[in-house]
Length: 209
Image (tube, helix red, strand yellow):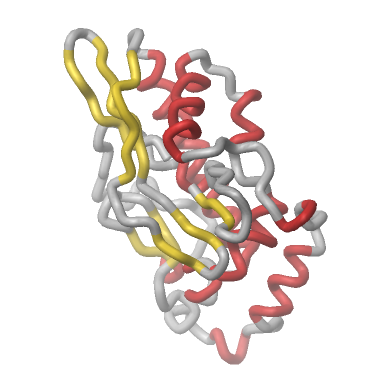
């Protein structure tokens, strides 16, 4: 989740982070590695999620010779595919991370994926507000590759989250984020984040964002 620090907090899910699945699903198999992306550009985070390798550019064979465009030009070309967000702000979302997570869980519980759209960082927000100062940019990963990684992982994560949310009725006890917020330029990134729910007489912690 990200929130531009130059405006009031308007938390929004970044689609990459919907991927985190539920119920402590932290597989160590490479079977879920996104296809079509050079394995040298990826590494698995401690919670099992694939992220850009910190030195992915240096680990890509021939990158000096074969790089047709500079990182700046790659970003310019990616941004040219979308319109810049109005007033350089996230839209939709929620006033706090707690409100965002509760809203997201409620929509998961009713399988209202259409209503999730305003909560999720769009391609334009990714291009202009998230990517330029992100770990992906620092690693040398082109923005188009980073976005593709997000989209592919998010689909699988959303499927798992929907299954967990609809398994049986639940009540949200509280929300939480496991790590300290990370500052990336003008943005503050939270996560992994989840909900603690009560159902069937017991509490469960589900990492969903």
